[in-house]
Length: 477
Image 1 (cartoon, helix red, strand yellow):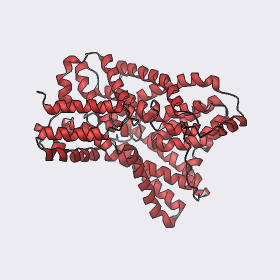
Image 2 (image 1 turned 180 degrees about the horizontal axis):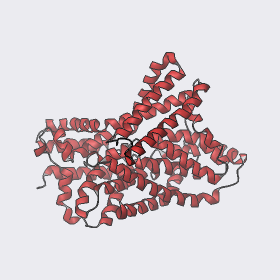
Image 3 (image 1 turned 90 degrees about the horizontal axis):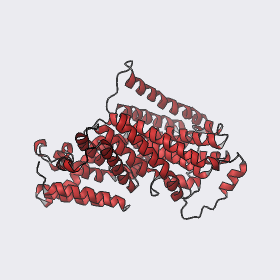
């Protein structure tokens, strides 16, 4: 297909957005403005260009709403559990086994990874940081060691695969016509490889800093000056009336319920004993279970105010979901314009006349793209890492998925594999472990360390881990 002005404008918009990310600026304005220009140029009408801004965002919102919903529901459940103290009860058993620095490091990794898979690290990490970091430091683990364990396990290993909630794979697959389930499986493998390599290197780097268990370790850490500009103080939630009776009950019931779902999904995936689950059935099962748990917790807390409490928890969940994901909508709207699958809906034309800007550009420039699997694979990884510089890690996943699908035909590599590699780069960097303006600033605050030091100590282990996982993906996936 002959490239038009609209094609070149889409390419320019993509470059501007990536450049804006490199400058560590919010990319919403360039995404919206370029959406308007492309709509204007493609249709030849300023009015339709203005309408494109709205229709692109509406299309993106419709495609992504299920992701917002599951995030909101899981966050609502965490708020409900906090109201009766079950959030603390759920991790009390681990405090009894954190006897030394080495054990504490790996327990922090396990607890953070497990909770972050279900609740995402943003709501789960503050709970872990506030309650377990002091225990780990008393056991002899250094503050930087505790922060590295939580950051890499939660914002790196768990979030990059997003195996349970599946928001990241859904975004990656959204503009490419790929199967999100396949990306989820490949991303899980790559996230584990990256995480194991990075965590091993981190442990080797901090093991000399581990000291003997002592109450003095905690006292010295607690007396650290918190007024440094590089530090933030953890927020304190309001004290609420807690029901001791139901606190323990739900501290057991919630993990058991989710464990049962995991077992069910595994059986449905790998055996014929249970019907297979298609599409987002797993996330829907988790979401439905979480809603019932929110209702049950609310009635256990106070039956008279349960109706109001459930609504309040869900409202808080949506506030959180849109706070962390809302900017993805206009950005995804821009990238959806480049997909032939969505352009027809956005521009209001039939599918036969809908443009496919991204695919056409890649097809036209194939002669300039090295037809080498490793160069292409590491190129996608680098693009993902650059896109993560905005401190989100999610905003460019639709672009990564679309590029991976287009590039896969020229190098003969599986599109889902390339998309998974790009997803690793984007979320490990921006999700994040390698940018100081990402959510890891909260981890640094709880550990009372410099967030820049946390990023610096993470850089080499994470980059080596991503390199190893990319090579593995290109050779074996």
